[in-house]
Image (cartoon, rainbow, N blue to C red; front, side, top):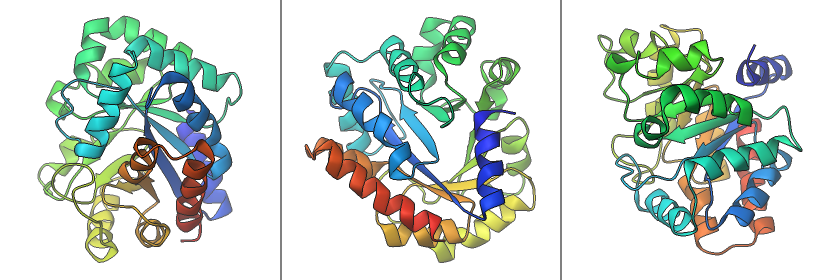
Length: 263
């Protein structure tokens, strides 16, 4: 059982929804980023999504793009991202970490080496947004064989014909993208999300976590009430980008996690 599976079992036993927080590794620099990441579990975060900085983040809106640029300019690399995860694991061996990003840095490192290193660093799952199910042999299947969950995105345009293919080799949870377009582009609405989550749940036993367009405690609670949990990224990253203190960032995260846990 992966840390992700164990976390959802724990939440289900407590009758709670999951709160997932996304931050860009190395934003605005390595030390500050590690400080924030280490504080996330204490702020109520159940699963950490750790962004892997990349030069061409096509699915990300301006907020996440800028975070990636800040991280890259501060010298962040795939190796340093794994180093950050290893440092986090020195103090926390239970909170799941999902590495989220694009395939190019992984391909450049070499899939086999990357998977060995990621597993050793304490990474539990991968979200690689530019690898469709047709390319499962490239990374998805090897990742699962290495003991890493491979988490797939479903979107409002994933119809009933496409959905089985998307779910075929997915594990850990399904990430439902609540809006069409890039991150931070619009707000999620529970009335729109609820029926879509129900449709996906009819096809899988995996938890459905909803992200994109969630930026307030009230929105976090509303979305978590119609799913198995909520993901917030851009709203947190924007606080970091604005230069808010770590304490203020984590207080904001706590308000969002309280919202999801109240659902």
